[in-house]
Length: 79
Image 1 (cartoon, one colour):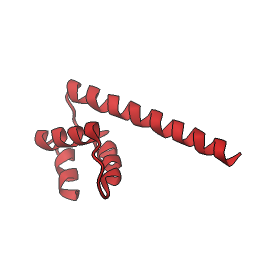
Image 2: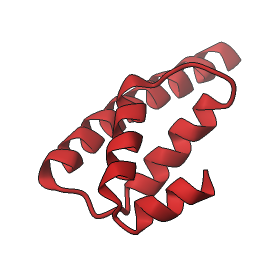
Image 3: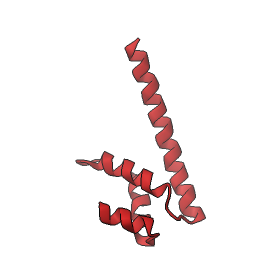
């Protein structure tokens, strides 16, 4: 995955599309959650087109909602 991170940072169009497709589909397999979070983090600072930025922002917004709901439910359980 370090190779694809380097390609993403360099603005490789194919790598960016791959990573965006991955986070949109969010496949489930061993270590896919780590890859998902890594792609979210790296894509944040990549040179994205307007369309790619919209796709990224939509997924990021959904992830932030999921994370916030999960945190609030864990706090409720702790009470």
